[in-house]
Length: 190
Image 1 (spheres, rainbow, N blue to C red):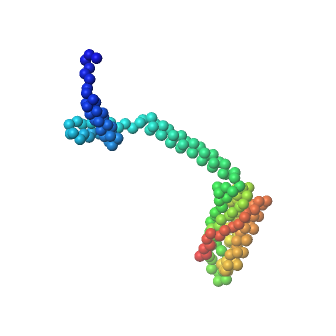
Image 2 (cartoon, one colour):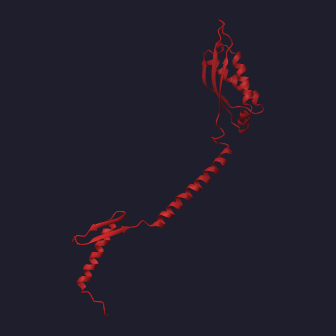
């Protein structure tokens, strides 16, 4: 072949060794452009490590797709849970706070009562009625509290009677549905 000189086998071996060294440098090099001296100190090897763009794009598309799918599933699951019989969304109790004047005690002193109750209802229809008739429930309980005196609230039996009377008055308002229980969260008499 004219114009091309053939290199001796020793030179080919030296070039192959240098290529292997450059590959090893490229594998050890950090991201981006890097230069490193070879052992003989003569040449610099500039190695550019490229991040495969296709992989980054595919990864970001997969993450976006998974976020979109999970958002869609969670939004539909919320709608499905609202109709489920064991749903925690619907079974949250209604909490009400009442402040009223008590009837005068034996000495004629007036006192205030602050009562916080939770009304729990097992059926969805009863929960809906509690929300719809909230004003009527508040009115019945407020009138009942104004009839009580401080002596009516002394002792554990009195509080049990208070709970049963509150439940009875709430159920009269919700008829034909019924509340399950009335829980007294706080009771303060001043």
